[in-house]
Length: 65
Length: 506
Ligand SMILES: Nc1ncnc2c1ncn2[C@@H]1O[C@H](COP(=O)(O)OP(=O)(O)OP(=O)(O)O)[C@@H](O)[C@H]1O
Ligand SMILES: [Mg+2]
Image (cartoon, rainbow over all chains, first blue to last red; front, side, top):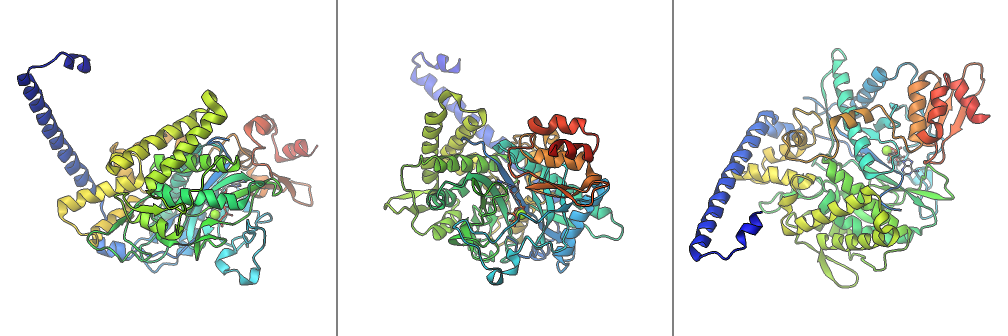
């Protein structure tokens, strides 16, 4: 559908207009992505072991196969 | 053949006793296995039967002398460590200093995923059960391959192959595939080098957990001087007809699509090798070095030098195998190719295409990309260098089996990593065996006649029947017999093990 609507030749004004629309789209999407990232990092912050340094240091394994 | 083949995977889990870094890992591993065994085994606990094991048999045709073998290679001696068989046909045991789950034999990549993921749940349950023992300290389990301090432990794949295929052909065509497949199958790692110390600002993350621990191209060892192609020749099937290819260089994956593609694409390449379909030599110059270099470059620009002089990236090398596989499947099956073969080809192509464009496009499918994306988000937000303990913690905690703590689980739970199976299918596979291999017979026998099964292994179930002086050994030498189609009804109608054995040996 969207494809078909684009087919008729557009005036240059229309072109600029639609480009602007695209740009705000991207900006909006970036914003939601940023919010998403923040949300997941907040969630993970909650579950990360406290004192990363000690925790990592004390993870000592014997070699296996 | 296609992606279908007799296969099974083994995973050695990282283990730590909370707050006690010096705790004995063999004791902790035994606690894990014993906790699960005592809560699930209804009565008698069947032993593992070691009769058919020969870990010093080399696929190149000789046996290593026992005296020259490193003690860690002697896995067939019953060291008295915990070792049980589950009703799903799997083996749960202590291997060296790690608890290990060896999946039952299956025949499709999706079933590899299903019974391997069931193993994660078995381990998780085991750790919860162990924690209920009064006075115990919680034991944490990780599905990873290194402590980043020099130690590595494995996640092996096993593929049944025709004995008639020359081993040299397997080495020739599989090595370049293995050097490059990590771009799909890597689990991701913070730290470069065996001890993970090299975390300079621009070099901190690598694609594979395991690549830095491989030192030779071909060999029998699995615990030292690890080889890209392992020559262990212990077929657990008729040795005149089959070999079992024991693949030791893979990473322990959590992402279902990583596991699926690992088994599916490897099975396809093995099929092409068996059928003599690979018409070109893709041999890599300096395979061990290339393996590491590819792992060390998550931008995927690292070039691999082929013996024919070409220099191409790992993704391009994978694309060569993909192209061959497409032709092969078209040539052998045309429109009759089975669904999973078609699906593996499509996903493989899709993943490679996107990896070439921008690896981050695969963050919802592949472990290493999902992990790197998360690490980069932390680096961006908090301005962390690669040597920051927090990034190492994220790497480690990605593999934590606990659903509330494990970061893989958090990402999958939030829909950021896609799955192939639902929880119910995995949960059922903790108890039910696959129906299309001998694991079905083994699992059903353990489920229905637990009291009468004295021991079992991949190649046998051994019954101890009332009124019989000697144990009755039922060999299961053919991995594709003992399926539900073969013995389902027989087991359904045999009330006792005596009745079953009488019917089989009649
Ligand atoms: N004939 C076969 N072909 C392919 N896979 C097989 C065959 N028989 C068994 N397997 C699979 O191989 C794996 C064997 O696991 P096991 O831990 O016993 O292996 P191993 O090579 O003897 O052990 P390790 O490497 O730990 O010393 C299982 O996942 C099993 O399903
Ligand atoms: Mg094993």
